[in-house]
Length: 470
Image 1 (cartoon, one colour):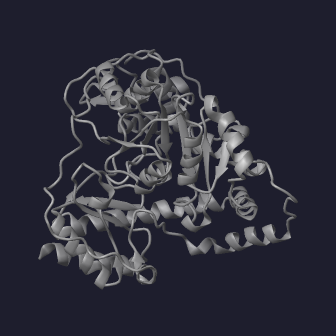
Image 2 (image 1 turned 90 degrees about the vertical axis):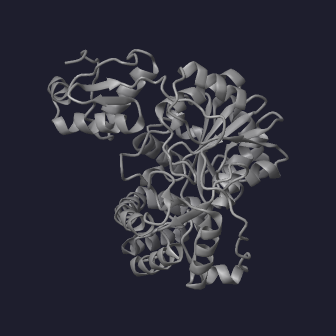
Image 3 (image 1 turned 135 degrees about the vertical axis):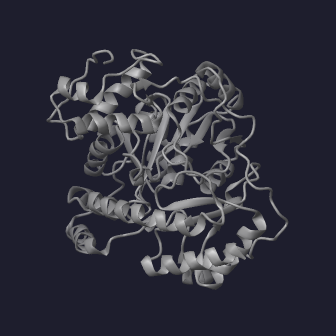
């Protein structure tokens, strides 16, 4: 049967019951009140104890298993995962050896504008919601803008709406005053760097190119941080120790735990706990880029890393994937020790998003536009992902789970270069995996499927598959 658990569900809480249940068990594991190897109640027994349907308990257990907190033993139920079974390899994961083929020449800006974007950052937008979009901007036109520089943290109504959304969708409970509005992820990262002491910043390799350029533009060295763990035996303390060695001297570690950019992995529970412990040991800030966590369709969105330790983690969110990149709007939650310095920098520089953009996004959140667009896009991505896998899997190795709006494929560099050139000749822009790497040496393709419509996606996949089959 497993032990009885002290769990309570609040039916006045806007979060689903399964999400509440998963959150409470996760906290018990983090706090050490549920030790590794502890057998948990069956979903039937748990549902009876809590007075809910069995589906609620199954949803919570499935979510925790997907995140790595629980493990299932055939015929024996569910257990708290034995967290000592993952360790950090000495190098990043290996892919096919690079070849000497030259990358296609950079396209001129006017050439890029004519290509159908199949990159990792162009989202699909449901035009059926355009009426709500136009209504929000008409409301902005009728509103009276502030006479001077407004609150350096951003529009109070929008910060309150985002605080509610972060609690509901990301498991991150914050006060509206803790939320700072930014002009996107890199702006938030740049502002955060101004509040940190001198020193290098660790970043995943391969990883988000714009973040690396932002760190270097601030005059800081970038240290390589492998984004994946191996399955070799190692206690969590040993894993934290090895991570601490990599973070030695670093003032921050930039990571994408919900959907590693660009390999696609979900950071497992063991790595999350070890990373937080390593950051505490080295007095480093963990910078969590939560760029597209709402678009997982294999499991429910995984709670933010910052929800485990808001004192150590700086959280960065963005509207670029849920609404439009051109909106240039994001938000961040800064650890309390850095908040005053970040606020002062913003007060002096007025480095905040334009008031009309903030006002429009508040209306879009308030009227349910953002939730509706996310739901529609998640359905579209979930339908398109298997089509992409079916077309490319015979010719390349999938680098990680397909989630969000793109997939990443490992293959020799010369074949990847040829495929990118063939796609460009057919009117599509596909990115090389090598462009996201510094020293990891991985090669292949990053294929987005948010930008094209269905017919365009089918044509692009045909072009890519034909090129890779040559």
